[in-house]
Length: 113
Image 1 (cartoon, rainbow, N blue to C red):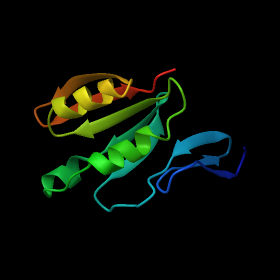
Image 2 (cartoon, rainbow, N blue to C red):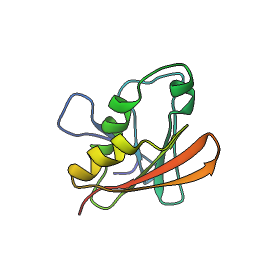
Image 3 (cartoon, one colour):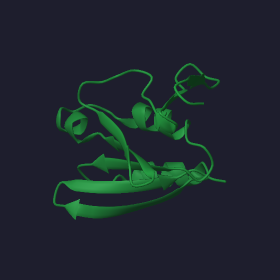
Image 4 (tube, one colour):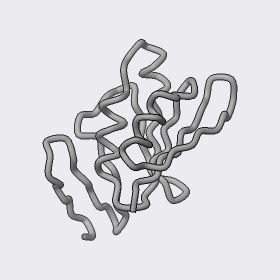
């Protein structure tokens, strides 16, 4: 899949491959959300969106639905999102959080498989 894009079923799910590396891509870009791939995980930073009073749930779920089995999404948030972790666990994902600083939590979510 080098240099190609794969569209998965569903209006918000697409996956791009650039130079042989699969990338989770937000279906709708948002200026306050950053995403990248690093350390074997896809990262989604929603801290700025949360600071502005925005709701990142749809963006997080958009990325989760694109993960292949056992792939990891790291969500960077201002607080420990316990309701999100409960929700994704009910959907079969593994989830855990760690505090990086007073206003920076990283929630690691692994797709089932």
